[in-house]
Image (cartoon, rainbow, N blue to C red; front, side):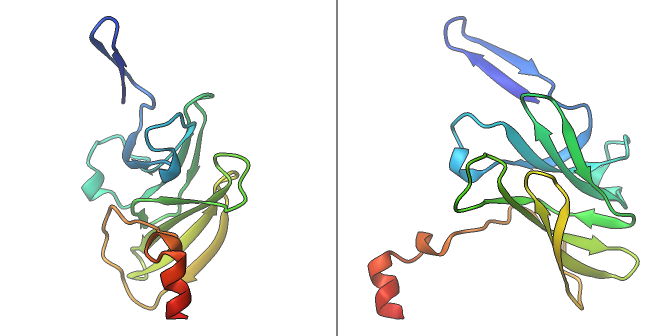
Length: 156
């Protein structure tokens, strides 16, 4: 759901973007508060509206302009909130990677999944010998967010 705020008419107009069960919509953080075209989210194939009981949740990439949806699913797996990391040399908004943790129900373990931001195809997976509990609101920070360049030189 998206809400359009009309400053002239003082109206709030709702718009249904996607008639699917989705959670944790994310975008490129650099575009927060600006125009953006793509949203990344967890998505369910079930229509019961009970995300917590889902045995299969995947990931979705939704194009707000064309209204096209790309998805990634794997049987008996649960995805957590995706994080978009833009390429440092990106020319297109969706040029980068999507990172998320996936829980495999059958093997009772997790892995870090990387999807190509444009094609939405899997490009890497780092399997873990244990389970990472499901969580949300993960965040990726570039190193220079924490250490100013001068301090970083001193630390090295």
